[in-house]
Length: 126
Length: 157
Picture (cartoon, helix red, strand yellow):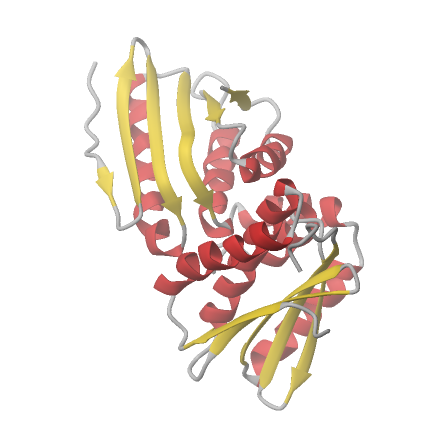
């Protein structure tokens, strides 16, 4: 199995993904704001396509080095979860979001995100 | 003694929003004891400024942070069209009709299928930053104000 997804490099943010066994791991670093929103949206869309193509059951999202995320980029995750929710159970996969407890915004924003899709997302604090 | 404040104004430019957030965050860290509060204020500043920049067709936008009477107020401003003002007034009516967390969750559900921005900014400021949000209008201009009670750092004033 291999991913056909190139690393995303924006002014203040990078996104990179890899296969880890039968799971996918996406790492976001930097600041996700209006400047990177369109690129991140496209990237997540491609990642979703890859996860479906590969029949992945878990996608890890590593935000431990993501300094800040604005509401436009948070919306990308909300839409991603809504897309997942609309899929049949056999095509669904789960998101495991790895957060950084030192970045306080993550605790509040990710709690809101997990309330939105309790069955599809798990938050892990490293 | 005049209350401490910080004010930054600039020509609307999305690239400056993160820069100004980091700048104001240093001010919060200097003035306030609680790191959780400074983090919430930084989030609120970013969201309010992004809105101000997004909706300012031209002219000037900015942020003023003022600490007075154990309350901190973050104020942003921008020029506004009559159509946008009408939409903003309606948004405040709906927002003030619900508890912050309840409204935020409703907006998260709504935004999933939106194509015209997230619409989450003010809801996020209320729910995640625990701030009261109001607005003031003067001819052609709107100010958004977010406020929270705070405990100033000893010696920070």
